[in-house]
Image (cartoon, rainbow, N blue to C red; front, side, top):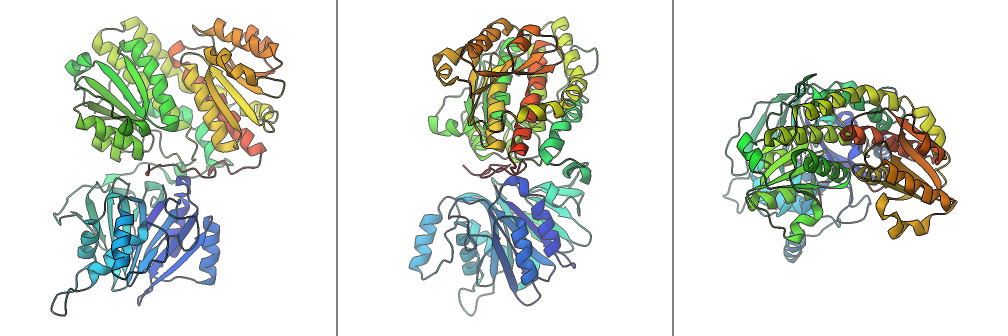
Length: 615
């Protein structure tokens, strides 16, 4: 959650910090603020709401100086308000923080007993007071601790997740940053060093970036970034070159990032396949999995852990793993794993799916699995993020930056990656023939072109969306691999349009949901020509018999489905295994256009964050 940006250099950094925070808006926030050293002291400006309110506050109280930190906050401890907005201060110290300090209540009681007075309800203010206390010499003969020493002393007392940036009025040309279980990246700018929660925030100023790892801190000056472990041990790490274009992180002429990213899916799928699947081949080349041939053959169970949209891609992955590799598989919502005390074994492969690679609940599930000896494979979009680092191997999706909070291209690239992995496993285990594998991979190669056909139908989807925009409830139905797509369609509609929607396995309709059907209920039915086609047609007939409104996603030329539908979105014929990558696109477009019709903020839905780094 939240966003951090820091800068140390000769330029006035307020515009740089605000621009960086704007590029982190996708993470979700409810307040924002800056702290900048003006050469004599640290000044702070904070505001509730969107960054436009912070910009207005800065017009009234301009901040000047090249050393500064900025933050967008998503409320956890304390309601959204100016007093709870970051940065938080204590004496000469200003701090911004992402994550949660789990022992903040205990520390607060101890500090209040020492006479410390708090100005906010947040856990972050604890950090500011701890650093300020650590900066004070123990007596008049002691040396004055440096900011680095004070930050180390403060962090030693914390339990929880954090990414922090700290500055002090006593050291005007320095920012100290540190992280544990929350992302932080460093970048070299033009005569400056920067830090941020995510690469897009500093991409305008830095191409070579270094990702801090857990238990590390860095001292930033205009000339250098010195990375150490929390015990002071030096860390040497080569920066990585970011190949994204700046335009990839901008809207590119589209009205919203979500629409742009829906249209980017063909290109994203091509990037996911590149170098991994050759045309005409029956095999997939997947490096970095951390699984050799013998281990692939010895897997006894595949155990998916994921949250939200990633959980839906994992559900599709489960079908593929069982059908193609013949391995028993389950999907667990990651937030339930650590509390259910599950049993893992060394023959289990745990597949952790997370677009950001930083999802707190999924990371906790990975650690639980590793502690019991299970092998872990991460499926993620962000290079060297926390979950891949905690895993035995990683399968990166290469979707490029996704800014819209409602995931689209990260979802379909997860599907492509999981399908390739299922084929890879099936080949290693001898459960998938050359012919069957070639058919699936050939269909996967055709998918980007077929996606382009589907996104070209956006104007028609926009027209249909008008009939749904006034609905109070929408039901989504699907069977087999289309059931997770029904769940994803319902989730997308809820996320961006705020319409109540539910996804159901179509076979469950008579076990409750059929009671909801009347002339006012739109029912979106995923009914491509697959092994479940006839049974799904029967569900459509049952909806029509109760005057329900059927909107269907069908294979081109399916007259039976069209005859039962108020509106139909047709998709090209393809191999059954590839269908979920195509059928989800009308779901994404429908949700987008319904939200636009309702006049809502599509890219930043209320109460949601792009990267969920707290439980």
